[in-house]
Image (cartoon, rainbow over all chains, first blue to last red; front, side, top):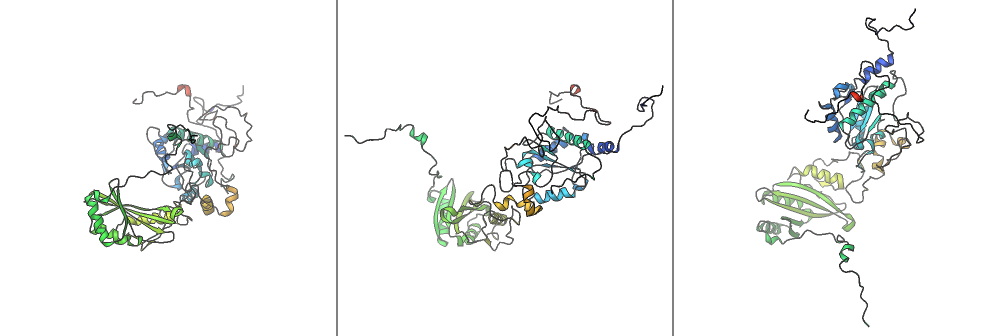
Length: 169
Length: 268
């Protein structure tokens, strides 16, 4: 009887896996999210802890880079002052597409406790944000979960980035 | 007939009286009570006009003329061993007397004494820089200029130190609002995107406790996530928190909660 579908991945079958371009590109992207080192305040300490051995970001393929040219995600960890706002925009522009932004902690989300003249009231006034992590400061587990959610988001996206650009304006 | 006296409860009265109506003062002692300070003050008095002098918490406070500040500090450094300027700044008394108070906190390691030199300047008056005497005054005077707008004459590099160079306003003045004026509120938007972007980005939301659960553009309710831009009705179905998609990910194990180990021994 003719088989409708041949299971190639079966034992003894052909060493072939079928997939789509979207899936294989996003599989690669989501498992090598290189993060830009962006510790601005105390959240940066939690971000460092997430990268260190106890929480171990390397398992996800998330490696911190000191250059925006080599990074895929910008983890804004800490208070963004108005003096620094132009630099975060410049660094974001220097990152190559596709790029994502995680806003980590209350200060980056909304300005947090710094209801003052010198603090930007949320980084989403400057750059588009993909994920907001609550907490002051968020535990490394929160950041881990955030990176997992970002992976999930990346896998749901189209691999072709000719889609609409994520610009605020 | 007896005159009427109010029969308020005298014992309860302290509870209803504002204890801080008159701000509490640190007790002042006479300079004569400390012989080191007394001799220092007599040297100062020989050369300069001294308006007031007393000791507070073991430190002498001396009020001088603002124009004498360089000479006084030079004398204190060279003749009286006050070799360190640990702090200097200004206090805004504009509302009270239309003046700034400038203070210099000096330390003598030889005598193990601290002395505070104070003087008043008018609103638009400048003060002589003491940067040539104490290098630490360099940044302090820049900060004083940055925060109060007080200029220091003969300073080598009088430029803002904390706020951006193109900032307008002096944030430590009592008249400056804590949440910033119009310029501060739009500073980063104006600088990066230009004034025409104000309408698109919108004003700052200063209420940090504000949670708009009907906003699906910016935030998602954890466990009740919906696609971006969906209109929230309040009857969103509960989504289980999942680390991965339903079908799993190629070559990556699906996280199984039942198979995970919960570590109770921290020193494992």
